[in-house]
Image 1 (tube, rainbow, N blue to C red):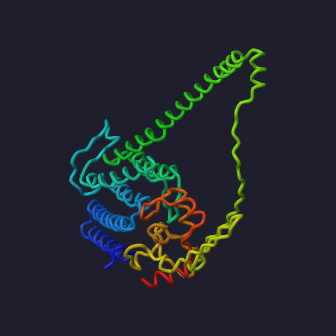
Image 2: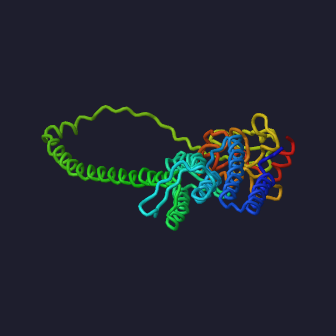
Image 3: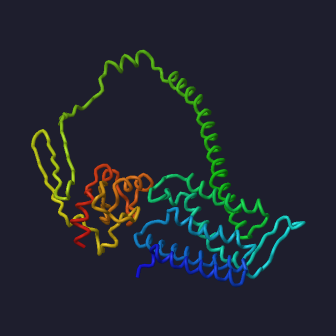
Length: 371
């Protein structure tokens, strides 16, 4: 039974919503009703995160997608706002003078520790460059500013409630502090180091320039010879050896084209002889390496099924032979030079002239339907 579908999450959501509303009508307790809604959200989001993570790991892809940021943040945001009101065991509470600011730590706060850890690890991978790109609605974007904007929006959503009511959760406050640490470490501190290095390099280059000029003048003045030596050196020729050279002009033309996955013809011509080599690529060469099923034959980047009506072509990884949409394959290559599935390097020559490129309709008919 496939759990990672909309019906499963909708069923959990309806059950939690009905139980919460009935409890509110019968008991008229808003605190426990909020707790029921929070538990429902926690279960649905956790299930979605675990199943999606398993799906990505199955295809050996990194978790550089916005859904892995939005899922844990939805738990963090709701827990932050209901923590002061939910019916939970209060561990301790910190209040300022006049109760203007109140900070809570309870069972809801304990449940927020895991989402905060997940978000911290993900954002650290983006800022450190371990994940060079982020996928937004199945489109790969190579930018470090996009995770920063998402992170800043999360902080704004958390601080907005605190500025209005003066109530906050201790774990949410820790998440804000981690954000400030990331800003200082990866943007302010790194920027200062780069500017300092540029200043040092520029100062060294300016200090070396006059010394080179003086050295040239001194060497030119000391390298003068007497006229007799100059005349003698002109009269005595130095022994030289002449080596016959041959100029060979070669013209090389090659064409590599896979229209329907049948054959590739490469022609090499020289001045003296003409040679023609012919390499045949069969349909079996387009099958994925190892054992594969039809369920696995999805785009290795967006994980969407292929359809015959698509006009986009398919490019295969030259190593594992798993398919990807042409535009998404090229976008992914701009961010990472490794395959999104087998994590093996892909050469630039292959991207410029892909050997395994085929239309979507032919690939479905000759490969996917044959599995």
